[in-house]
Length: 215
Image (cartoon, rainbow, N blue to C red; front, top):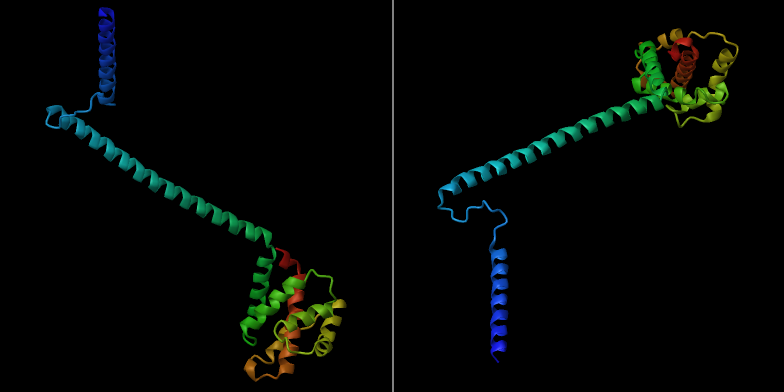
């Protein structure tokens, strides 16, 4: 009987020790230096250091955000330059169109509207390298500004200029256009506008055929 009592007491003693060790473990702070008593004189230094660490972390976070924004903005700028450069490299006709539009405006802007000249220059550049006949090319240029005109009528108007281009004869378009410089474009008849448009298209193809247009 005595042995049973002693064994029970020993078991209870061991259980109490385990419970106490478990309680100590649960109550033990993760940071042994944490001041549990805010009134302690060491607490002020601890919290001051903690505030400095938090302020430093906030500064680093803000600086990281600012630097990352600047970095991504720089990437966007570089990408925009790459896209623009690639566009120019992939579209070699763009500079040709610009040069031809400048040439036509320099020669005929006093007599013909700018949008008229630019449209003819754009169409001439688009179809210049095609396998179409000279007459077809001239007609398409005129159709870009006079879409309502009958195609057969336009072929009649383009015939002399197509012949001149095939035979490498020169037609003085500038002299032809100079005759209407003192007249308002809107007062010209449709036939006159069509004839002038054919002449300008002919001039445009002559410019595209010249060696300077390849520069």
